[in-house]
Length: 145
Length: 334
Image (tube, rainbow over all chains, first blue to last red):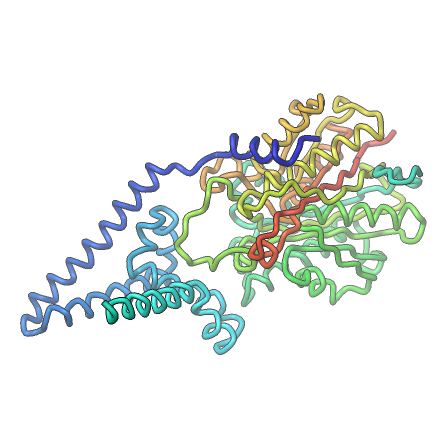
């Protein structure tokens, strides 16, 4: 039979490839829509609560988007959006909410402590760890220079 | 038997006296939906978890296969079964209620071939009279074990396959009527160093090619001897690779080749390469092909389920995917 090296070449030559252009386009459109919704909430809250600071309104918008991401995951819609848009719905904060709620729902059957609580961060965990690590690193560099 | 020879010929050739297949809603919507015995409407099937639903399908297929043959549960001497879940829980838990001896097997998606080979050996050796061979897989339970939570919004790659929700049972007997298992070519573990867990077709194609080539070499038969050469779940790309590999060795099976994984969902683009899973080849064989064999529309088939033998741990540790294919010959004898 064929050599392993030759087979690897045969596989990579013939394998169907991801359609990059349409993936990027879909991610751009859906990601853009999610950002526009966020901006919409920002404008709405700014109009409703004119006495609040800009930073506070940003925090409320973030909370609203997290809530919406979690809600859409709970009712089983977010995975369909994600399947269509890829990074477009993974990168915004709604995707982060999805990555926590999805395993929490999935592992409910294994109990509250060892199921939901233990598995909740199985996907978001690395993001949090790397986020804190890189923030610390940048913080140290900022403090030195 | 010659030492190291992979093909065994059964002295007493066991009969497949009955089969049963049960599938999920997605499989029922495919082009072969009409051939399956039973469809569950929801993946949970009124159970609290997907694992329990799979177990119920497993048990259901055994009970109804026995019923279809007109036998009694007490007539079944042995149940040989397997599935994809860790510690093959669907199999072991589903046979708790039966009063038969039990052998639990794991050979990923090729498990059904292993159950048929061991079942045939037990019958051919005159040890038992009736043996049930069962496998199952469930999209939702496999997905959470091998990949991501169901509700996670990630796109699938174009090389991915969709685990078939389905269970099937074949009842083998030393006497009776129906198609018979005449010989088998046992497979070797073949590893062509494919690391991408989404590309199981490429990992399994060399194993399928190896077993098929060995079968024809050792038996002296040619592909035209068979009415169909049925591979398990290579998928569309895996099938293409199999045909390329065999053409390299001057063997052309394209006119007779049928891959259960490629065909079970038809041209559904969302399933990419098609179906996979321990239930995939079983439900296709038990329904579409068994009917054709029984009606003598086809008389000789080479059934070659394929399995990718990796686990989530081995993949995370950077291991490649070893694969296996076992071939079983099913024939209508005069």
